[in-house]
Length: 165
Image (tube, rainbow, N blue to C red; front, side, top):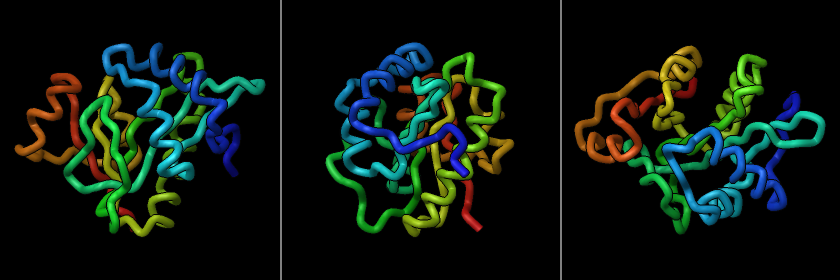
């Protein structure tokens, strides 16, 4: 059961951008980034609603292991074959937190990763989210080649992976 999570539609993109501007003020991305992720992998793009209004979203897609895309960059295409399932962004408005929406979407994303044939799920944890992701089985991975890219997010950015069972 998806609860209040549902597939993102193109007409949700304005609301998604508004949520991103509030939640990820330090990590701005152009509207084209959101639109491209939705076009390339709609299955991995979801919104969480309350009373018909989006109050959270997630963007995810098959990707390359240990190669998260730079912030605010277009992908062009998805890798064939993928070597990880990448969670690009999970953003919940403050009033959404603590209600189980984040935990519920993790299970949906793990299912999407399995259907995509990926061996694991990866992400860059920012904004103090490492604890949340750790509770869901993600582990920090020290990849020296990623150090500079991670610093472009912030000093505490952390690359994390969860193997699929």
